[in-house]
Image 1 (cartoon, rainbow, N blue to C red):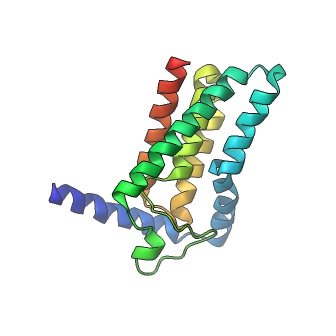
Image 2: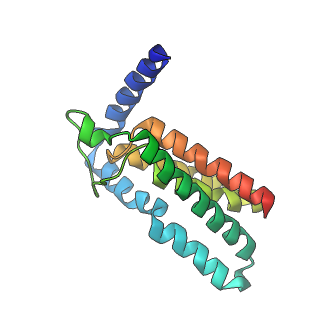
Length: 172
């Protein structure tokens, strides 16, 4: 078990540094894209579609909102249990870009949020997958580029959001 943890940590840090040491234009793009996984947009868009049902997306928005809520609770619990320190606080020579978070790193809340929101739309309307899936991937990737998460944080967060959304979609 220790060897596996060492291997993951080594590669996590290697990939983190490769992503974090990006060009300024690249960083500016990801500073913008990361907000798509933040609370304001993920919650706001769902409320819009729930409150204005003429857009015929009300059911999907409800599923996304429920998945977002459940996955957020799970993220908070995992962060309190695991207590992984953010890379800009624990690694040398890290350049954080943007907001410096005080909570723990694992798993990524933005990655969880964006995947928990886009998966219901992709399941309900498969033709939007080619737009939403890369967009969600960029939001997750932005968290590493900006120096606030390790790659494993975003992989687990994205997986958690996906699984939660699929579960809620199947139930509602």
